[in-house]
Length: 219
Image (cartoon, rainbow, N blue to C red; front, side):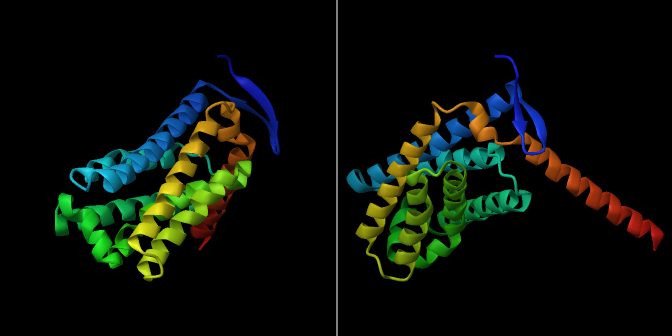
C-alpha cells in the first residue's frame, strides 16, 4: 500500500509502510495479552494452577511489545508505562523464585501483599486502556482502566474475596479482547495518531537541549 498524507495540527504528515507494521505489531501484541489473560483465568478456574504460569510468558511479551509500538504523545507517560511493565515483570519473577512457578497463584490467593510486587504490570495495562479511551472513547477501554485497579486494590485491602477478584479480572480480560477486536477494522492512521504533533514535540525537546547546551557552554 502506498503512503498516505494527512493534514495534522502542525502541518502535513505521512503514514507509510513502517507505520502500518508498527500498528499491526501493536494490535497483535495487545490481542495476545487479552487471549493469554483469558487463558490463564480460564485454566485457573476450571483446570487448576498447574502450568498456569506459562500464560504469563505471552502476557509479558505481548504487553512489552505493545508498549514498544504504542503511540503516545507524552514521552514521560510512555516511559512510565514501560517502567511499570518492567517492575511488574520483575515482581512476577521474584514471586516465581520465592514460591516456585507452580505455587505462584496459590501464594497470590493466600498472601495478597504480593500484589504490590506484580501490581505495576497491571498498572501498565490499565495505562494502555486509559490511552485507548482517551483517543477513541471506547467504553470497553473504561472497563480495562477501572476494573484492574478495582480488582487488585480490593483484594489487597481485603474488601474483595478471591472469587470476586477473579470475576472482575475475567470481566476486564473480556473487555480487553473486545477492545482488541474492535481495533482490527480501524485504519492504521487511527493508531498512529497525528505525527505532526510528535514532530513538533521532538523539535521542542531538541530546542530545549540546544538551549541547555549553550547555557552550559556560557558558564
